[in-house]
Length: 488
Ligand code: SF4
Ligand code: SF4
Ligand code: SF4
Ligand code: FES
Image 1 (tube, helix red, strand yellow):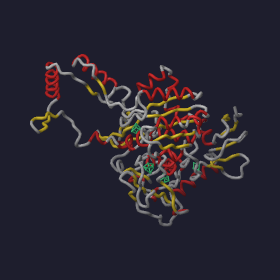
Image 2: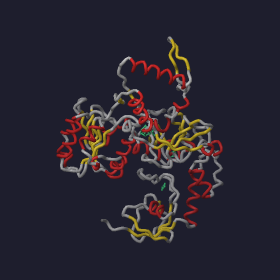
Image 3: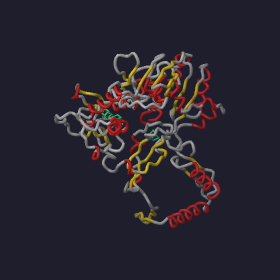
Image 4: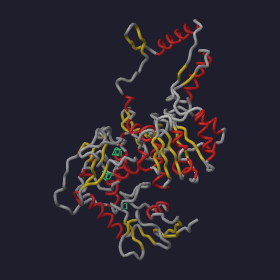
């Protein structure tokens, strides 16, 4: 185990692992060093210089976000020189920034506003006119206001490193630098909104949410996204009984702060005018609204008719409903309708995997395993489209642990761009494709195999037997498509 490093920050001593950044060591001590461009989990930018600190024996102030802790280092984060530097940086960032927080969409949750309050840069010595550039609409979701941008590059990095899309870049130099979309004047991307959420100021705003309400006017309600099987936590902002936005800024839930376009924006169906709010009964060719009592009586009557004729009934449940609802549905089927013919839309063959691993719980991988695994094989699935959180987790692994990724698919997938190896196979031959990588995979320390409905039934048993033959620990994730496919 590498030797730990002892350093002193504001008179407090701390021991950290080699490579720990001073800004992180300070956070562990409860010492807050202000930062804009530093963002835990993303690459370092060293762009904003808000995190300047004094380091004993260093000739000038150092950026705590790029400085690795060293043995015996003595750091001071709150001296007159540091405070003056921070105040000057805020003043500098406000050179071209409009001073109109009350009308900015970010007002009330803006990191620059908070910094200006904290470091007291209330007045500017600049008297020159501000350089103004009109706001741009890059897509129905993403709006960019250059004047408010502080060039921290968080958006560029989260899009490239987090989402694996890389739709944002930087053009021009110096004071004319600005963030640019991938298609000249517009964006072609996932529209996930991660760049908007991570922007510390009001430079990137959301076409779905902006100017509809204020952060302090909303109730913030935690819930689980039901649009795929990954189960992300999302926090909905509610105003006037309407859902205004979704995010997960408190990083609770298994997804941390990640949300894809669906988890962030696809709650609008709740208020959609075509949403069915009452049962409809068909009479002749017309559907007429009815009350629940009337509708359920009619259904019961029809069911009874089928049963009395001696015909057989089957029940198809939803895999978007809760365990409790599914429990009642099967009870209705078995006890009320006297049938055991119950099913739902099956995707990944979880039942076959459970049978194949024969109760070995350590053969089932979790999302946390995906972040740690030294090697991952993704077989027959387009994660970025079907399981965006898993795709994100694999990229986290790539950044932090440099895990090796192997892809077997019948078409191009986003993972190709960072996979150690990508194999294209005809549909239906994914398992053979994976087997052909056996020699290489057997040299890995451990392996997680992620597969979906491309491998079903007996092939799942063949997959597990093959995994056992590799001679390394192998874990599996069987992907299902809907929010509660497992419960159903
Ligand atoms: S919306 Fe998502 S995919 Fe599009 S630019 Fe922003 S981070 Fe990238
Ligand atoms: S748009 Fe926002 S996140 Fe992107 S560089 Fe500007 S201030 Fe930073
Ligand atoms: S990855 Fe799935 S669960 Fe997570 S936000 Fe997207 S649709 Fe919802
Ligand atoms: S936070 Fe250190 S330079 Fe930006």
